[in-house]
Length: 283
Image 1 (cartoon, rainbow, N blue to C red):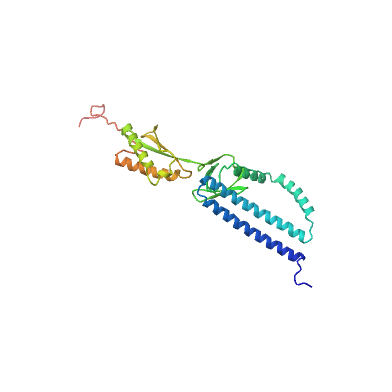
Image 2: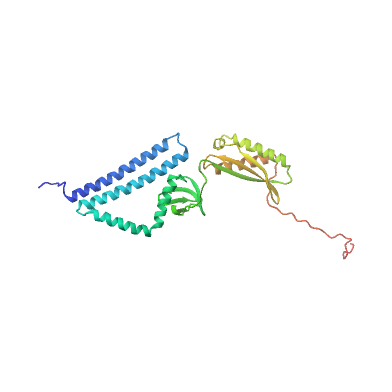
C-alpha cells in the first residue's frame, strides 16, 4: 500500500485548498504590483490614476470570488457530489432570489455604470444627496464616503441618482469679501485686483492655478458693505487650500492699503427734545 494515494478524495481536496490559497496569494501580489505600477506612472493624469486604482481593486475583489467559488465546486466534485443538479438548483434559486433582491441587483448595475462612465473614483470629493465627503472605497454594491467630521457613510450605488463631483478634472475656489461703503470703490477694486495678480505669482499657490484669479464686483450691496467675489480655477481638489491662501493674501493687502473690511454693526440715532418743545421748562 502506498503511503500517499494521489487519487484519494482527501488528498485531492487538500491539493485544491492549497491551490486556492496559492491563487489568492498570487492575485493579491499581482494586484499590489499593478497598483504600484499605476502609482509610478508619472505621465498619467490624477483622475486617470484614480480610475485605474479603483478598477484594479474591484477586479481583485472579483477574482477572489471566482477563485473561491471554483474551488468549492471542485471540492464537491472531488468528494463525489454531482454539481450539475446543484448548479441547476442554484440557477432556479438565483432566479427566485433575484425577484426578491431587486434592490441588490439595482445596486450592482449602478456600481457598474459608475465605473464604466467614470462618474467618480476613490479619492474624489463628492456630494450625494445630503452626504458629502471623500470617497474612501468603491465596490459594485456601495460607495463609502468619509465626511469632514470623520463619519463614514455607506451609500448603495442604486441610490446614487444625482452626484456632484468637486474634484473632477478641475475645481474652482470662490472667495467673497465685503468692503465698507466708506471706501472708494474704484480704489478698493484696484487694490483687490493687484492682490489677486500677486497671488497668481506666489511660488506656493501659483502652480495650483489653471487660470489667473478673476475679480467680480460689486457683486451685491449688503446692509453694511458691498461684496467683491474672487473666482479661481484650480487643479482638482486644490480649491480649499487656494481659497485659504487667497483670503490671507487679501487680508494682508487690505491692511497694507488701509482698506476697511467691515463687520456687522448697528447705528442708533437718538433725537432729543429741544428746550423750546412744549412741556419742557427752561432750566
